[in-house]
Amino acid sequence: MHGLTATAVIAASVLVLYAETPQQSPVSTQTPQFRADVQYVEIPLIAVDERGQFVNDVGQRELQLLEDGRPQKIVNFQLVTVPAPRAAAIPKPSAANRVEPMSVADLQRLEGRIYLLVVDDYHIRNTDSTRTRSILQDFVRSHMGANDAAALVSTSGAQGLDFTQDRAALLNAVEHLRGSFTTEEPDSVRESRAQSTLATIARLTTDLDTIERRRKALLLLTPFIGCAVANGVLRERDISIFDSGQRGSLDQSQAFEGNGPATRLSTFTCPATIVSGIQSAIHSNTTVYAIDPRGSEVTDFVPLQVDGRGGPGSALRRADRLAGTNNSIGDAMFPLATETGGFVVTRSNAFGKALDRIVREQSVYYLLGYYSTNTTHDGKQRITRIDIQRNRVTLNYRRTYFAPAR
Image 1 (cartoon, rainbow, N blue to C red):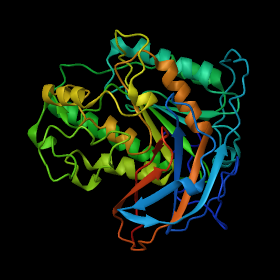
Image 2 (image 1 turned 180 degrees about the vertical axis):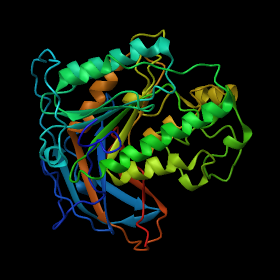
Image 3 (image 1 turned 45 degrees about the vertical axis):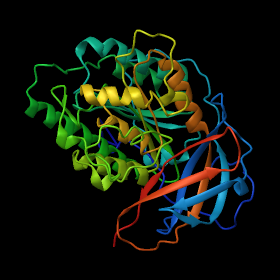
Image 4 (image 1 turned 90 degrees about the vertical axis):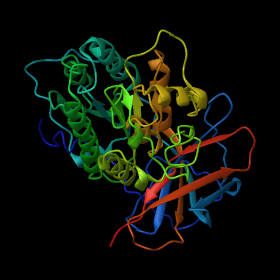
C-alpha cells in the first residue's frame, strides 16, 4: 500500500464542532466547521419516523440533552447534507495504471462520503468468502458514488487498498479476498486473532483522526470477533460486561441496544482493545456498521438493527447468551457498532437495504453541539442522552464520549 498506509488509511472529524451563535432551527450545510475545543462536544444525530424515514424538520427547541444525568444547553444545531452519490460508469481496470492513493488534503476536500471497508478475514470462513465479496461488490457498484472515496483493509493484512475514488481498483482488490477461519483453531489462536482484529480496528480509527472536519463510516464485515465467546461457550467471567448493579445476570437485554442506555465501558471484561477502538472511533467521528456476511434463510427480512436498532428482541438475546452462540451480546461486533452510533446486521440476506441505510445516514444528519458543564480533564467516559418532544420519532445517536485527559 502507498501513501496513507493500511494503518493510516482514513479520514475523520474531531469530536468538536465550531459554534459561534446558537441555531434555533436546522440550517442546511455541506461543510460544517470544526475546532479542537476540549469542552465542546459534537454529536451526529439521526431522526426517523415510524417507517424509518429521515425527519428533516426537527427543531432545537424540541430537544432535551443530558450528560451523565445533568441538563446541558444546546448551543448549535444544524442539518448537514452531503451531495447524493453521483452515478458514473465504472471503467475496466488497466494493469498498466498504478492507482495513486488520495492524500489527507484530498480527502478533506472531498464532496462525497468517506468509507473504510474492513474485512475480518480472520473470522470469515472460506465458504462465506463469495458472499462477503458480493456484499462489497454491491456496495462499490451500486451504493458508492463517483464523488465518494473508500479504502479496503483485511484484518490479516493479506489484502488492502489505500483511499481512492477508483471503483474499478476497489472491485479488483475485493476479488482477492478470502476468509481463513476454521473451527479447528485452538482457543489460544482464536483469542490471539480476536485481539489482533480489535487492535487493527483501534489503530485504523485512530489514524482516521488525521483527516479533520469530516464524518466517516467504517463497514466491518465479520460474523463475530469472539471477544466473549470461546469455542462456542460463553464463559461466566465474560458475562459481566456492563455495570448495571446486576453483574453476571443473563437478562440484560438493553446492554448494547441502540435505543437502550449506553454502556459504561470501564466495566468490560473483554479485551481493552474494544474500549480503545470505541474511544478512537468516537474521537475521529467514525461510525462503525457491522455486517455478518453469513446471511439467513430468510431472504427479505431486514432485522430491527437496520430499521430500528432495537432487534432482534430481548427473548432472542437471552437465548443467544444462554446458548453461547456467536451472535451473543458479548461479542465485540455489537459494542463496536452500537456505541459509535452504528448498527449490526445479522441473520439477514437483505444486505442491499442495510447498505442503503448506511449511505442515507452518511448523507443527511443533524449535528448537535454543546459545551459540557463538566470541565474535568479526567479521560473518563461520559454518557449523553437526547430526548425529543415529538411522538413517533426515534433518535439514533452516539450515546457516549470520553473526556480529554491531562
